[in-house]
Amino acid sequence: MFYFDPMYFVFAAPGLLLALYATYKTRSTFSKYSETFSRKGYTGAQAAARLLASAGVRDVKIEETSGTLSDHYDPSSKTLRLSSDVYRKSS
Image (cartoon, rainbow, N blue to C red; front, side, top):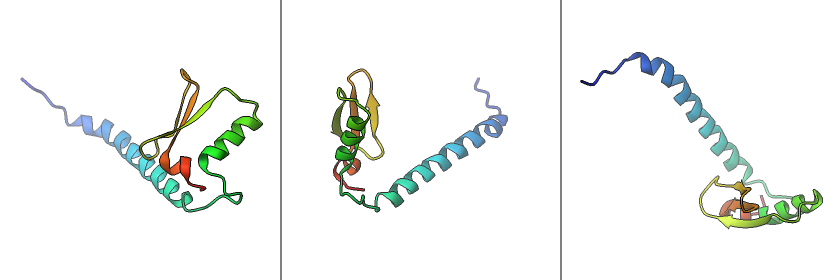
């Protein structure tokens, strides 16, 4: 028979609420600063390329990927993948 302990919610609820709050803060901060444009007019791809070059990193590719807030670095292929919003916009 299936047994469910209501104390589960006592331990799971704080973690779930913290995760939801972190997601909200990340999305709202991204939304706020995506409307602020760079002074030099660099796109995200150009800014990333300049940053990598200034650090002497020459073997990392920069690619566009789908999704929102899906930016990530793939160490197995040495590829920095930027979401379309970041890759193409100058914010």
